[in-house]
Amino acid sequence: MPSSGEQPQNRMNETVTRQKELAALQAVELVQSGMIVGLGVGSTAGFAVREIANRITSGLIQDILGIPCSLKVEQEAKTLGIPLTTLEEHPSVDLTIDGADEVDPDLNLIKGGGGALLREKILAQASRREIIIVDESKLSPRLGTQWPVPVEVLPFGWETQAQFLRSLGGQPELRQSADGSPYLTDQGNFILDAHFGPLDDPYALALEFDQRAGIIAHGLFLGMATDLIVAGRTGIQHIRRTD
Image (cartoon, rainbow, N blue to C red; front, side):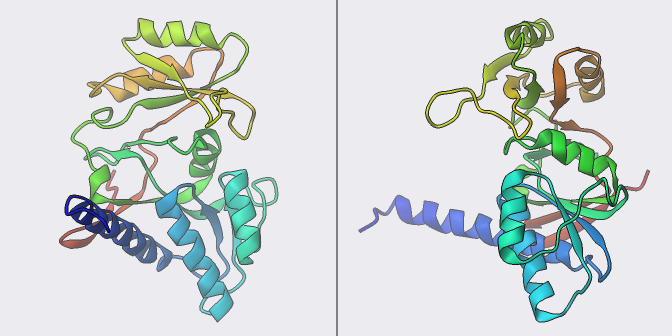
């Protein structure tokens, strides 16, 4: 029998799960027949993938082609019966529905907690609309307040990248798998989770990352989200980028 302390926590978890589902359902309303749709990674985006499959099965939307952000999402989409394509066949994507680990007031993001940041960023760059769905716990006054910045690096010389991140003021940790071995991305790279604390200038930090050989991708998604759908205690809010 759960203790009295466990019961409020269980209710809180159920509330957050429901918020994620509501945000996903709102985002899928934007999917129309004939679209090329990017399929995002993570628990919140997973609700959207399953709802897209439900609507295909029920005939509410037709002629949809999905492009998954990871091998895991690709397998799930195939199991659910979502027809898939590639960026080689369709280099322009109508919209992508994806989650985020942290979102600031300017709709800048930290992503990559699920390890798919490189493919997520490639797909976001190819998308006319990048729709980010989150529960309200992911909102933050400044990026880095709640979450480290994932940095995908080549295994070759990865410690030199860790030293570089330290020189920028970060505290990098090599992400590990459950068995203690280094976590490998779908591309076979390592991830350094770099703790910087609240970022004063995420654009300047992103530029440092972009200029460094050996850094393949980073989790700062700046100016890329066109829409943010937030589900919280007071309902659902849809924020659109205005610039």
